[in-house]
Length: 282
Image (tube, rainbow, N blue to C red):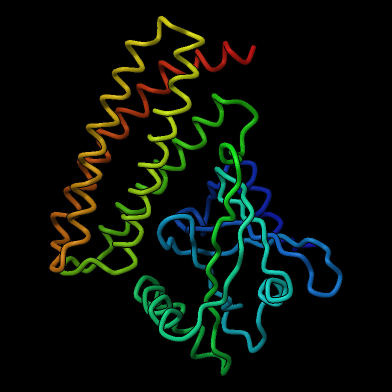
């Protein structure tokens, strides 16, 4: 059973689809559920994470610099299959403890983003582990934390809005002369996720809606065209953050351009499609 502090975070996280208030409002957190190493009892813990591209995220077993590894880390050593709740999605993942140069590169990115990780390492003689969580492929659509298609669309859209807001804030908080390695990864991970989402809409959701509501075809065609325009902006952002000599000002400008177009697109899509999805469910 989580302690009262963690349970409060878990309850708020689940109730608000990953959105938190107070100290953790601008933090990247997920809920990690592991099987107890001795009992097999499942335990859920809020854990900070770093995007790592694609379907992989990194978590760090700091335990605040404690001399002992956290319980969740000992659990996943015994059973590396874990459950991850991102707020918008719940999925099974496989945990792999990073070692050697791969661990050092990931650790350097984490410390560059938040020097607090280095402070934790200074407090303990153990080498703080970095763990990669890779989603286990499953058949069919992803498991969205929603009770209907319309709620699912809003949950996913809000997750993109929140991640883009975090990236914009991280760019504003930068030193102005360089773009951090982890911030580049955050941008590229966001771009890939948005591409995957729009591909799924184009190939699965929109044909489903079109078959149910033929009169919506002009709306769907406009949304497809907006997907193409947003794809161009995503490609520009990818180029801006992947360049050998990244210009932070240019990257910020691309993020702002993408933000304006994406918010307009998401708002229009919700206005036009949520009522259709609700009517199909009634």
